[in-house]
Image 1 (cartoon, rainbow, N blue to C red):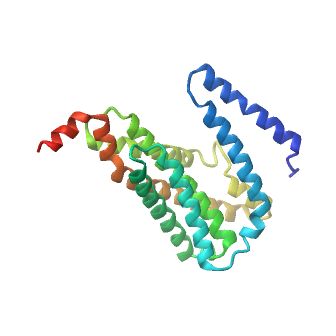
Image 2 (tube, rainbow, N blue to C red; image 1 turned 90 degrees about the horizontal axis):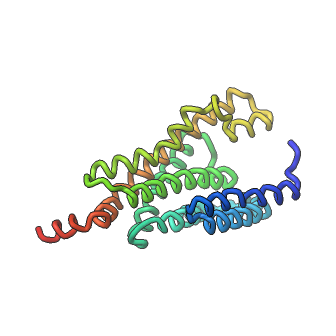
Image 3 (cartoon, rainbow, N blue to C red; image 1 turned 90 degrees about the vertical axis):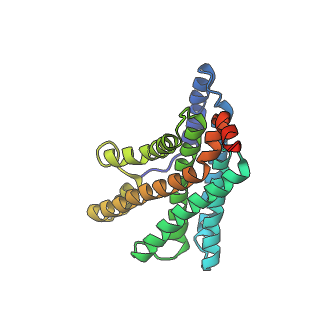
Length: 240
């Protein structure tokens, strides 16, 4: 495939202003987030491109685990901004993302899908951390905006909504979209069936990651959101 030219990158950066304009016109108040996220993502990916060879050269197990943990902490810090009590939210989000990512990486290692090497563990850890981060963000945002007066319903809705993107992706996999990992493997010369099997393993694992992260984050945080939305319930509980 042809490399993306600098002019193409500049062009797509220019078109980022389209959602910014839409946000402004529709009073979504996302202009700063879109602009900052776009610039930040661009710089971070550019830096990764320059340093990825060095990162993949890590040999010591504690350095590899430390790098994955750093990604998990960064994801948790980003998600925690959507919480009510920042420190409490951060602790539980860190627990949820760590548990989901740690479990999934251990599963992959146990069944022999990947070896314990930086060039495999770090990209996989990043992929899992990103999925867990999105699920946790949706859970917190859903609970924050929930108007339900029932705790169980609030929890159920938050977890359900967080799982929808992953479930919908599974429903349309191979029909609406051709997954990137599978496409990359085929372009690299791998057998299509082998690429499909690997992709299936990935998407099923991502569903597990989203489920574990959303359940832990919701279970640990829902009371704070519930009583914040319904102060009367807090007073009733205090009076008991």
